[in-house]
Length: 92
Image 1 (cartoon, rainbow, N blue to C red):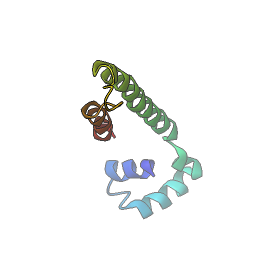
Image 2: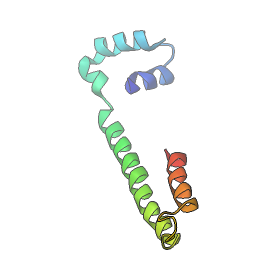
Image 3: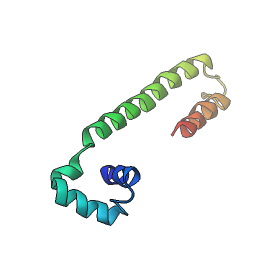
């Protein structure tokens, strides 16, 4: 589908919408024409996922260690835990 999206954007007179783009692509290139572009997309999504979750794990440990020892009265970080785990939602 990403191939059709770019075909419509690049040549809007030939590919009027997704339906005609699908038909023209299958007619001109066959079903292989629809599969074109999957490898760069896969690589891009993989790199994005590795960076997103990899950096999250690194910074989670870094910030958790920067908060210091666990309070003996509560046995947990209250403000620190909220800060670390709310930062996770901002990244996602």
